[in-house]
Amino acid sequence: MKDVTMQYKNGVTAIYNLNLKIKKGDFVFVIGGTGCGKSTLIKMLYREEKPIRGEIIVGGLNVAKLRNSKVYKLRRKLGIVFQDYRLLPKSTVYENVAFALEVIGTKKEEINKKVLRALELVGLKGKLRNYPDQLSGGEQQRVAIARAIVNEPKLLLCDEPTGNLDPEKSMEIMKVLEDINSTMGTTIMMATHDKDIVNKMKKRVITLKDGRLISDEEKGKYKNEAI
Amino acid sequence: MKPFRMFGRSIRDAFRSVFRNFSLSLASISCITITLIIVAIALLASLNVNNFTKLIKEDVTIVVFIDREVDENKIGVIRARIDQGDNIASIEYKSKKEIREEMQASSSILEASMRDWDEDENPLMATFQIKVKDIEKIEETASVIEKIEGVHSVNYGKTMINKFLSAFKVIEKCTIVAVILLIVVTIFLIVNTIKLTIFSRKREISIMRLVGAGNFSIKIPFVIEGMVLGMIGSLIPVLIVIYGYYAFYQHFDGQLYSPLIRLITPEPFIYIISGIIILIGMIVGMLGSYQAVRRYLKV
Picture: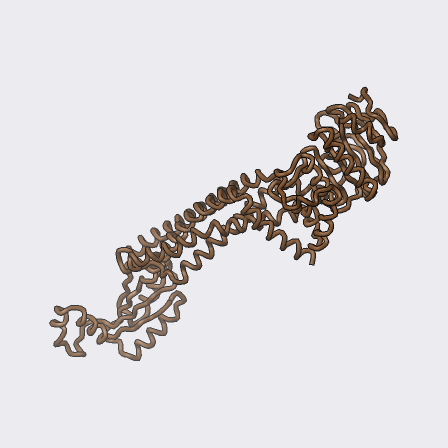
């Protein structure tokens, strides 16, 4: 993770001349009201959207210039977690997690080992054979996290991972994320608008408003003016 | 090893998703089945029509009458000269005696009148029966033969052949156009059906991309799936071709109306057609999937 400068536009400008640097092993919250550009920021990092200007470097790859057919190179270095989980509904928990390794051609024994470890980390080892719709929202999100970390990415992007969950379940998820951050040394960047979480975790907080960076502080709190 | 492993997984995933998305698979399969049945029938019909025209063409013969005075030696010379022409497929010689015997055998009236002829006063003429390679040049060939010394006259049903020829050309063109059109329509239908079924799996594709699957490794399972769908879809058409054509052939005893219009014998023919049908099904299925997936990879 090096230097990040970007501007993005699709009719409306979502991000204005943003400069950002995130160190390895950081846990960063991106906060701000609806439409402030936090999701756009995350999307640009995994090259769902392309900035019209500027440079985004993730793990040595220049994401802004990455060609469509090469996107997979970036995605293999990342883990991504969404508000709506995005699991394959017709595959079991195990298959969903294993899928991330299968597409990169990992050996079967290795897949087995890594999947079990990832599921253990998120506390779902007992539900290997269940299908996503047999799980609660919190459990589904934990499957999604397991899938995101199973190939040991350097960076984990989370776009409102707790958006659909009640506060109790949200804290469980945050516990899992914090574990991953501390035990695996994974850099985590999480977009959220959940005040309690941000206040409790006391991590670095980046606040966006109307596509502009308005504050960036270590051990930050959720600011009301951001909304 | 890695590519093999990934390929193996693609095949497994392809089969798995055929069954996990069974209702959608069924839609594609039935679409392929119906269109392939139509294509199969068109293929059978057009190949048979072409076979009829070929048979009729092959049946056209130039009959060369030889002057009565020509002796056996001279006949050899004439034969050699006819044979020099490059449009000659086969030559068959019939002497006066042979013709007489043939005619006698064919009717009792002729038998009665010819019985008393002795060999020297046989008024018939020896003939060559010639089959040509290219029926369209028959007129040219006939006129060349007519000029050979010792040839009395040449007969090949000039006007009838010209009419036939133009009719054959039209029929051949029509059947080819019909088959090609049908195949094109089939491709469109199948491609669209598969596109629809894949549309519902857009999400799956985006997830595949999300976890870092390369475009190529996303396409492969879908393409194989398309191939499997095509293969399953061609099963019923193949059965129809094999049993249907066989029954048809038996029912008409291998010919339509006259022995001249013979149906193609089923044995190797139906298997070739079946192969073609399966191949069309597979290729079209693959193409359809490939096209459809490609659209969702552009993010």
